[in-house]
Length: 447
Image (cartoon, rainbow, N blue to C red; front, side):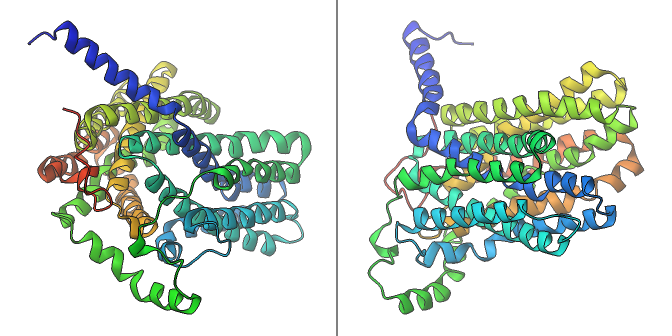
């Protein structure tokens, strides 16, 4: 192996330092705050709400039905075109205007949900929970579009890492933090506190910049009726037509669909594996909250540095391989049985490598979006990745029963390899230099 000269070594260290220092840039830190606001409402309609219903004496069948309130997250791409084309009620720009409007409504909906009593107005709670989920999913559309459009090409990977890290922190606050507040001050105090914390994201939209909109997609000069009519005529067909101009677009979609399948299959069956090996729920919860949380945040930030240093395509391949290797730790766990040390190692390896791959994938999806359809295209691509994980991962229980834990987790470690090979085949078409919104930029590969 050829040794690096002192000048080359200094140059390489400088690149790594710059990649890490990018996390301190104001706009990247703003993405962290918006990621926090994005992740905060999720558990307020999921596990935290379930705990409230359970302590309120609601039957388990009814609690299970409340899981359906999260449906808007899976279908947010249906109304994403409206946020790309229809002017927001607050004329502060199409991203800031929609963001502030939605967050104000979301704060009010969360407070209203916190005022409910599960013993007396359960149907109203269900309706408000659906409203919170809808507004939260709508907030995600705007935040993802703002992030993609406001960051420079060399900041996209760090933005992807920050959005994931902030999202996880928000979930921790509304999950463990919400339960802690409810235990000492009641459920309304818990939900009101979470509503107040959404002000973090609201401040970003209030005082942050509005992404620049090119003249050909600006709606400001058009009349209201013409804008609405033009929006419905172009918002649905336009994003698909624009995306299909990209070379090898069918292959890109297949690769996105399959990239996180192995991780999803393993993740769905990880807790059943731990329980079958004799781990108690407190042991699993402690390992997941302590080791899982910090490894996810570390992996997300590390993935941003790697993606910036080596470029999108190389990082997709490298982090994808590491993600597959991370699943092999489940095999080790299945073989070794009930050992706490291996549980901590398994949780750490899975979350660290999965978060690194997640950052690379989010950066890649961001690079595929055009400015005229950022919200729509990102929502569609993200839904495609989620669809693959949901549909295929749902078969994990049946498959693991038939072939056993060891063979099942060996399978999860190789199931994403075809997607990785597709990214190798796609070649350098995937970086920001080939994005129609940045035609004058070179590819984001760092040679």
